Length: 119
Length: 119
DNA sequence: TCCGTCACTTTCCTCTAGGTAACCAATATG
DNA sequence: CATATTGGTTACCTAGAGGAAAGTGACGGA
Image (cartoon, rainbow over all chains, first blue to last red):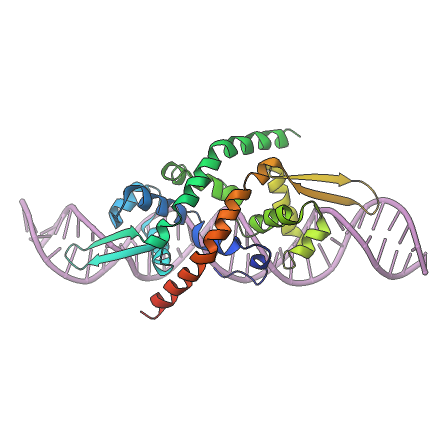
């Protein structure tokens, strides 16, 4: 979770990577950005292979980092709603550019791998 | 290394994350982009806390993915040079945008964390 | 003959993100 | 009474990334 003193000295991008890019944080942010405010169970359905433990962990981290806001209604059964904050939404253009790069970049990476793997 | 079937279904950004964003791949790409072609030992000096094992591992992966090119001179002592490929360089604007986001985003994240941690 | 240089390689270890499965509180409904 | 619902929690386990430290091969120089 904590970066050693060096990588970020050499690279201003490194600290952002820690906060935004991991297996599930990116899909969660994307889902909230695409489909708007969602309940816990709705997020589970949008990300069918995530487990409740991990979903809670990532949501808590995103909440702590100010990228996602949680609203809890102590009804019975309870209701919890998650939505993107303005800070989280400010990542939108970045995600869009990443998705654009993926369109042409991923196929090129795939070709490079096949070339490399066949000596 | 392999994504389960789902996260990328929900999020077109996820596959890119695997290729580009990890502890050391980002700093390595950044260093090669900033300072141009570098020898193995020069990279070690630019990233003082990386170990040779990990540097080799990440460079091989970047080479296989077509983001970095390796030139080996079988002299004695040997000489190996690494440089960014056009595909790797095409990530430049993205990294720039990430660095820009970091300027205002990271302090906001820091404030959010302090607010969260003091209940 | 021993030392140093360079680009690694090898072995061993630790740490953590994530997965599996079971459990829980509190209430409404049948 | 049992059951379903919701938003989690808990204990346990595994795989993989990364770190530490030592070794390697081939040669040139002292």
